[in-house]
Length: 95
Image 1 (tube, rainbow, N blue to C red):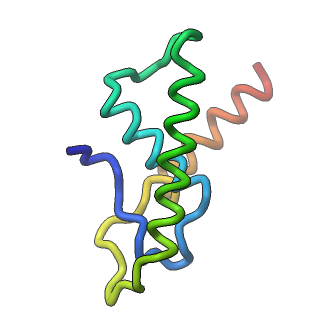
Image 2: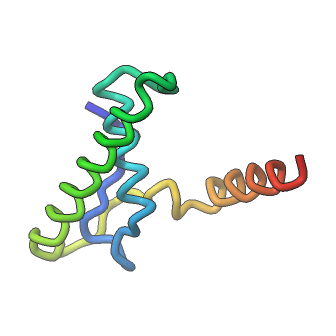
């Protein structure tokens, strides 16, 4: 359904809150069809992301350990993504 969401179970170190929230946001964007929510939709989107993130935390906490780590690295762990985030933050701080 949503190829942009990477597997979080079995990561070493374990998935961070930020990675779980990013996956929840991707899921909500996909099912809602809303990429950039309006002011009228923002609260509903935020609540949905929080609910999905909470359910994901609970699920990951209850599942047994994986025998092998996931085949793909979550985006927030990729150097090129980290570089883009750092550049965006630097631009925001200076601009």
